[in-house]
Picture (cartoon, rainbow, N blue to C red):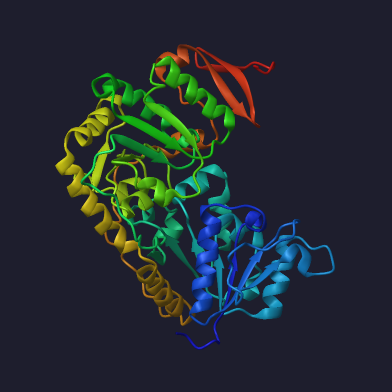
Length: 431
């Protein structure tokens, strides 16, 4: 336990007051961990809506800067004023755009900072054009934190040649694990349902072997973003005549209990940060199948040890599914290894890493850290990932010559015609 003399400001995204999500859960757990270790913690956001994150420790002082001062100040004005008045020992920024928007004045250069990256870092800089240059201009006295070793190689040069630490998220140990002695003949996907999650790829892959294993099925859990995307997946399932083997189960509030009813997990994402659904599946002993090029997934799944990493083609992914269907003994082996792998992300282990780094950063004693295994494997091109995240269609050569597809912009579905590489979005909305 630390003496309560270290004051840490943790600056997080605006929607922390009124939504839930992975990064928000990480923020709450991080602040609570610091408070439990006797730091003086101030969680900070700027949101015109009032509120406080649920499950935040009473010892954490939460400040919404939009309401803190009587005068109407911007985020930049209020954070600079608040820092000047309260002199923290450490500033932790949850996202790079918060660091940029704070635009801290040079008089605060002496205050050490930690900048967190909750996903593959190049995604943020590609998604927000010009942000790398803006961050470089302001980047002072800062340590960057990444979730996995491969993420270091995806940082801009001015960051990755400076001080970088690798600290993943934590996952609590589970009291229950799957019963590998029985066979459910059921496969599970449990995560968000959106364009980056590879569900069209999964459905098309399963089609390759579905007739051979009519007694096996896939259950898909998760919230659809947008809802129209889910309807397209349902239509694809019906088109491929898989509606009796692929089921859309909606949202479950008991993911761990749900996992216990399945034989293995499919996780065909193209883009992940720290895939919570995947590591939770491993923590109860489910073998998992992912794609080789997906960051995060290719860190948690060790090919041939606790699951499989497949190439981006239907035949190979189907072959991996078939291998686990056929080989119960292999599933049992992968199950044991999945539980073992998940244990390295136990909260006590991750929290210990954080405390060591925080004390070293505050004391200015953090030496350059060499991250083991920081050579990046082959990953999906970042432009492809960003386009998928923006729900943009990825066109093959044949599709660029001529194709008709759906676009889901602003929650509305429109037809998009691609002719000789030029895309035309029809103005009339499709019913």
